[in-house]
Image (cartoon, rainbow, N blue to C red):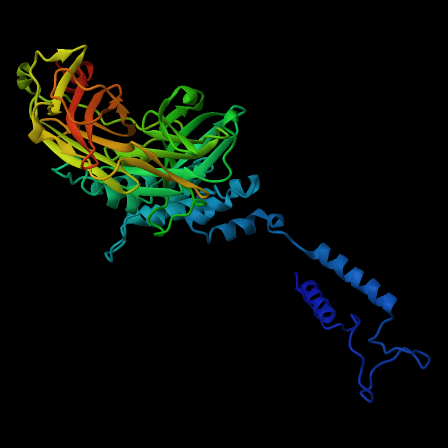
Length: 507
C-alpha cells in the first residue's frame, strides 16, 4: 500500500530549499551527540558537500516525477467513484475533457441515480409494498440491459420536457389588448433564454457570437451583437440565428455560457445575398442593410466589414421558436384548425391592429385600431385591403413622437441614422387570435403627393414592408412648423392565399 512517503519527502525537500538549508538534513548542535563518519571528516553526517547536495536534489526531483500521478492515470473504477459524487451539470462538463472521460461520464449506474433522484415520486411513510421492494433489482436490470448513455439521454430529455411544460404554463394567460401571452417577459426571465448567431465560413468553420445587448419592448425583443473580433465578411457564407436555453435552468438563477445549453434554430440567412439586400440608410460611419426576416446588418463604410448585427423578434410564438426547435431544424408552428365562420361571405370584419414604432428605447408610435373590415369585392392583385388610417379623414391622422432615427453603438463607436426605426405589427382576427405578426427594421423614403388625396403642406414620405403574408403601406407628411411627422394613411394588404389557408375557405 502507498504510505505517502514520497509526497512527504518531496514536500520536505521543497521546504528546505525555501529556507536555503542543506537538503541532507540539519547539523547536529554541539554537544548533542550527533553522529559523524569518523575523526577525519569535516562535515557532520547530516551535512553534504555542494556536489552531493546538487546530486541529491536531482534525485529528489526525478523520484518525485516518477511518483506523480495524473487524474487521467487513475483506474476506471476509482474515476467512476469520483464521478458518482458529481451533479448532472458538472458530470456533463467532465464528459467534455477527453474521449475516456466521455465514456466514463455516460455510465448508466451514475445517471440512473441522478434520474431517480430528480424524477422519481416521493415515497410516503406508509409501509413499503412488494413492488417498491423489487424496484431496486429492476433498476439494476434496466441499467445492464441499456446501452451506455441511455439514462443520460433520458434524464436530459425529461429535464427539457419539464422545462417546456413549465414555460407553457407561464405563457397560458393572454393579454386581451394585444392577443399575445401576457407573461412573455416573465417567461424570458424564468427560462434564462438568450440568443446567439452562428457565422459560417465558406470552408466550414463556425463562429458562435453571444449577444451583447438586449432590450424588451411592448411586443418584441431587440438583440444586438458587436465586437472587435468579427471574421472577414468575404470568408462568410451564412448566418444562423438560434435561441439558447440552459438545460438545467432550475439549478441556479445565473446562466453561464459554459454550461449545457439547448440550441433552437430560428432563421437562416445567406450572406451571399447581403450586397443585394435592402439598404435602410447610412451615416458617416456605417451602412445599414436588412435581411428578412427582421435582421439588420451594420457595415463599416470604409472597410465594408461587419460592425454589428441586430435581430428584432416579435413576441408571437417567440418562446416556442427559441426553445422547441433543434440546432438544425426550426420548431414547427402549432397545428391550425380553421374556425367555423360563415361571415366571410360578407368580407373580413372585426379585425384589430396594434402598431409599435421604436428605436433604442424610444417609442415613436404605439397605437391600436379596432373594427377593421373589408368587403368581399375589395380584392386587388390577390390582396385584401384593410384601411386603418384614411387620407380624407383628418381625425384619424396620428403624429410620430420625436425625431425618427435609429441609434446604434459598438464597443468603439456609436451613431445615429435618420429616418430608420423598428416596426412591430400585430393583427388579430375577429376571434382575437394573432393572424399576422412581425417585427422588422423599416425606413422612410420620399414619395410624391397622392393625386387622389388632399394637398398637404409638407414633404410626403412612405414606409413599406412586404412578406409572404401581406404588405404594409404607410404615408407620412413632415410638418415644418411643428417639426414632426404625421401619419396620413395606413393600409394593410393581406394575401388571399393566406386567408384561404387560415379560414379554410375560398374568399
